[in-house]
Length: 454
Image (cartoon, rainbow, N blue to C red; front, side, top):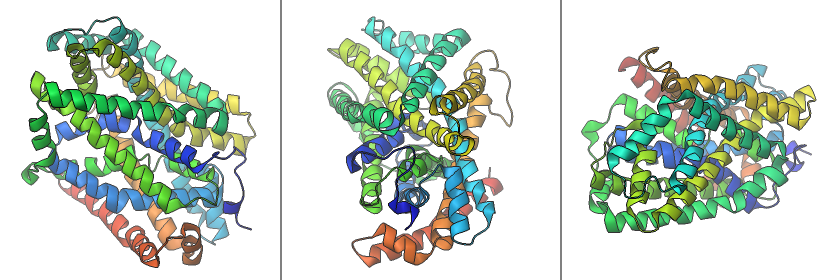
């Protein structure tokens, strides 16, 4: 009997919808609502979006299917899964680097992700106090600038966010991860639709549609294509070990391709909705499209300050944005925690505290990038920018490359064909073609182009 027919020692999802919500929560988080709008703004709009969508379909979805397949086949943490599966198939133990790469990349992402999650928490009481009601753009921008300039404020919110993440992870799969996503994700989706409605009525919705759907391919660069591919991996939580870990908790009776398609589809839909909610407000307020990481906080705060009922909706939005960030953070923290429980025999609270404490410490470097360390750069990037670039644009695509190679070339075709159980064999052959040839070639070509034409 294969391990895929057994259960993980960490527990199992209560239903396929619990898995879909959890994986979608992992994928959505800040990747769609925080990072997607600002990278689209920085890299030219519609042309970037088209490349991003192509990466989702041709690279992201096949890799997600492969990563869940590996997770459910191993039924362990990513590190131990990539120790067990090569031994089972007679492959080199050097494949363990894939498990370690995902956990390390996830650790780096968690360190700066917690800082940004702290921003979301900080905006909840400030919005609730009515500070943005009727405020001019300069006032809204000033609050964000003041927050970034205060290392002690950032440290406090960073600490609170990491503590909340650890609290959920300590409770395990069913009592922590599953319960946290059942209510939060539908409500966040509803609030995004409300913001789109506001953008249609009070924002420059026509301008936003043109920006998002009228491409100018002359604005594309090798860096933009690499960032688009990195965003596809980041927004789907691929290469972090999170999807592999979540796949290990998925019952063998549920379809991997079907669930993967639903997760990728929901994630992409929410990214598009987030763009339609945010860009109309940016355009009508005359805000800078290339504002960077602070874009969503400045833009939405301004929008909520102008709209009827904005105090209520704004407070609810930033509260739910914080929870959406938590659903991603808990998935990122899970692989390293699971490894310490499995391999070191640690109790789950001790393992969680260790991972959270280490990521919290590294995150201090990210928050100092905005103030005390603002003048220190390496390769033209501050600490947070360097951490984000290494993890999302380098390590995640590299992890995806290794996942595709292992699933396509090392795992026996008879096993993957049986486990994936596509309704039509042509779909299986297409998936195999993509993970064997298209995904590896695309990632290598994009990397080579970026290195040769920086």
